[in-house]
Image (cartoon, rainbow, N blue to C red; front, side, top):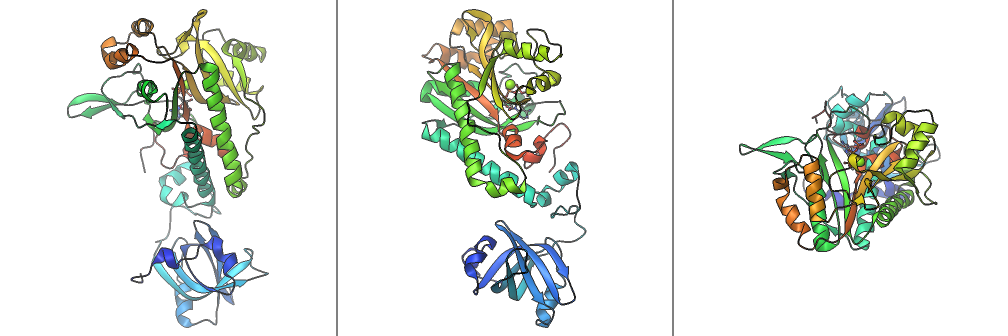
Length: 437
Ligand code: ATP
Ligand code: MG
């Protein structure tokens, strides 16, 4: 590689080409396609901003022809050339190069065709993630994810939420334990955190409004298109709000994300051929009781007190095409031990799920702040109060009324991109079968 070139300073991005007609530019990128015809060698060059056509007449300098004719897909090159407006070139412009330099070779055969012309199955794409992430689809997906993350932080920062970072290594199976991963910690058995639950609750008692965007772990054996063992959760906790108010926060957060993606990612949505769901009306709220009635009215069996399985969710989705909705007021037995019961009807608790069609996107609730009730709930569920010592102290140290939720980033990404499998919208997914790359 040429020494001493300030690549970033010298470089023109492909998206800047229309402003550079007649000038000499330096482009860096990957050989997306190369076509050798009788009179020309055409290279489609790809960088993070798009595609450009490099046209090399066969009567060019022999050195140029010799480099160009040795190029393969995914070679990394530097092109020095003049921008010409072109009626025939599909992209509207072409670059007539003075020189092409190979910076890094791609040794063929590669496991995957980045152009997508030779389709590959999902496992092949995931195995060769370093290549598949270069495809137009994946570039679009993760540009949308960046917008989504930015929009969530923007919304939360603007509304005074403090960004928190809680530990991933925890000493006790503090949320029950069934789907916790155990880890060896200098000879002691510890666990990977499933969520920041009790930490965010304690922080609501310090900062009132907190959020965290981080990886959490579930020893989830279910092989579905929407479960991973390692997933990004967007957690929010807020003091001095009730269930209605925290669902408002969640609704506004999701709407803000969709607005921002609409605004910033027109091109990416086009590439994915995807339309975002409408968000002009407020998300409906139905109670668990009402949801059970809807399920039964569709001819699917369900008893009060049972959770919605796949057939029940599909039945519900018939009422909610392209819609987000909340299911509120759940049976207490279905929700975690820290969920606040309805004082008027204790078999019900102030919990909610945010659902899109049939897919759960987020769960949340008002939390118990009464120490005695919390202790009772622990014992009822066979949990050991000693494991909750610090949290119990918190509950008798001025813990404000609070509520919150956890939202699965990749589940939201399915809605933002129209993709069907959570692994497609995760850069390096982990599930029962996959630990690589
Ligand atoms: P599910 O019933 O779909 O397994 P859950 O109710 O067990 O989810 P919660 O504990 O409510 O999950 O977690 C809050 C949110 O985190 C969920 O609504 C979902 O969006 C996301 N989430 C939970 N578990 C996973 C997972 N294994 N993979 C991906 N996202 C997850
Ligand atoms: Mg849930």
